[in-house]
Length: 164
Image 1 (tube, rainbow, N blue to C red):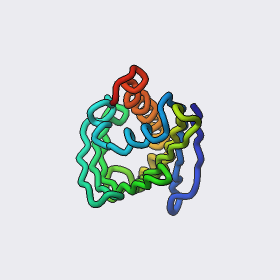
Image 2: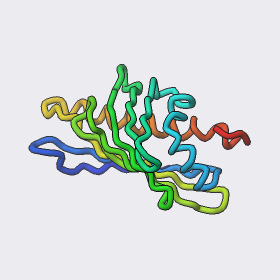
Image 3: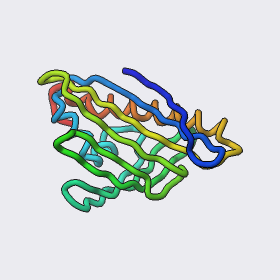
Image 4: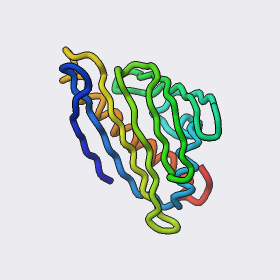
């Protein structure tokens, strides 16, 4: 697993942070993508997710509303999700929510017939310049911990031989 942090311009004097998390899983790329694409599975299997409502717009697009545990509180947002079954990617972009900006991508790669690498990339800016030095590292840690835990929790059933 690899975690990297990139800092790029957000807007004005604010800083946009980027988190990348990679994890190898003992399932096929197709199974990993299928599990991650079923966004309701996050609510069912992931302790960090309080609730998620998914509105399917088409076979390749949904609108989802998330509520997750965030440090000592909660974070909520609504995002547009775009699914590319051929490339095994899911792009998301916050439409409204607690962060000023939050967008990213899930990428699934086949390493072998029964092993996949999942990469989660996200860029975010909390939008409060005077508290950025305090809030954004907390957000970075929360996102990193939540995604690592989510990937572990989503795929526990697969590694034990039953579908998630």
